Image (cartoon, rainbow, N blue to C red):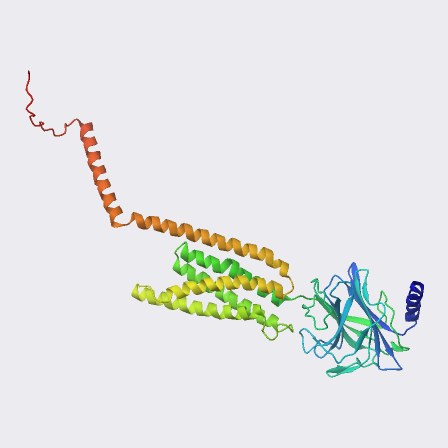
Length: 417
């Protein structure tokens, strides 16, 4: 049985070498190459293909068309057990995560799996020459194609609808499909272009998500706590207002990047995840907090009395910071990097501990000053200062040689014997 499988495998390699095909190869710069080969059978509407790329990337993909919009995309990523490859046919509606299309009949064939640091897919698609949003011109000698690889996240899933992160690199190329037409079968892999021309290669990455995360971390880990310190410890009201206003402006910019980032991905387009809901609520609360704090300050300056807004302002501020910290951890989970929540949580605890200790010491200092400034303490100080003044006066008289006043003690009626 084993011998027959080995013979079948090598015979299939020999057969693949005779299959007409066109091949595109993107160099891996010292690492594994990205390779796509296609065969166009002249006796059916099928398409046979070979797709391979670095297994260190979370996913690899090829697309039929000159841009993502309306392109048919063959997407591959590791299976849930990390030992095989999941092939997911998708269609892109724009420059965003493509969606799984169950009408596309794609089959993974012999040779699909993980091999030598590569994700490898040998496949057949029965209806990929035309789809609702476009078509493939199999008579073209320069059919536009696109390719992309994902970041280094460890995506493992058997689901055809698994969420993916934005591509780390992508490119555009053309393929000679006319030269790939003939007898049908899985095309052989190659180490160089054959009937393909690379037009563009670009490095990419999810900059919007990165900016959203970096700015929000700065706001909730540094700037908001600094604003609390300015007011509660330093007792600088205007500095507190400036710092917190700056935090809100940066937070609004971060929220805008977050919204733009959300529109790229299927699982976040509907703004229904816990991270997004909490984020929108916190953003709205910061605007309410800004308005309430400013109103309280204006009234206080006019009346010199505190307002009913003071306590709600303080409570809402605390809630905003703590919800922001919690939401940061949810954000790391949302982008598929939950382990980053551990050092993040440690930093949040340290910041909270620092503020708690600083507030405790400040309140204790205030209590001591308050006791020192009570009427009883004031009387005591005045009496002590008066007594100290008299003592000093007597010392000065003694030093000057003047005798202090002296009175004869009363006669006690004790006679001599």
